[in-house]
Image 1 (cartoon, helix red, strand yellow):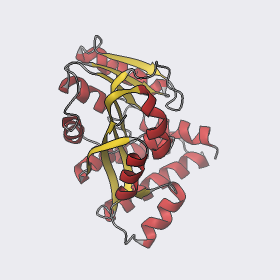
Image 2 (image 1 turned 180 degrees about the horizontal axis):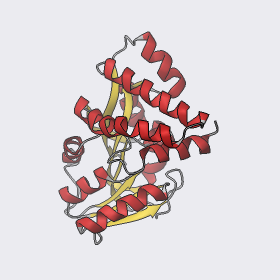
Image 3 (image 1 turned 135 degrees about the vertical axis):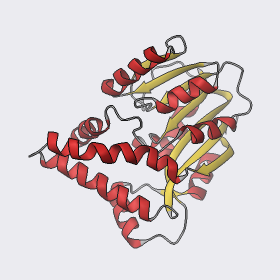
Length: 251
């Protein structure tokens, strides 16, 4: 299937779920705490915000303004309802846009945030292109699927070589960040509870998705791949997983 068809099916599978990738509030707050030199009311851009679980954690943990950007109107509509219900409209603004072509003035943000989304354009491309939108001395915090061990299980490697051929080790990502003009402030692996926060609702959604798309071979393939991924990541959680990288712009 082509990329647009795949993206449409993934949006349909994830729409309305609390998360579109691994993460939890504790990990978001832990990464935010590493951004120690933020101003009192920072300007924050959340790229690939999805339905905004981390967006609202950032809003609750700071006194700044958060711009939540995603390409999916369905995700943004869901987040808008939550923002209105929670009384966050004065501090959270929504923006439909492409992470590859941000519609903002350069050096507009004290912190750019992206949980589980930079893979869409690639880790190196994200760090290179987004740097221009971070103020001098500002921060970039991203979570990215990473190898934790050099001895990689063959079954997991075979799956990820197809699904994510650009996957690298934590050390390689840290080196790339440093070479790209970033100071590495800190990094840490996401705990398995962050995967459960994503996978548990997704596991309940899959039968509904399969039924709603009965007879659609592409949709069934997406469901099959999702189930394969969940089984492999649970089995090999010590070998591979998401890591948070907190970086500061070096000028």
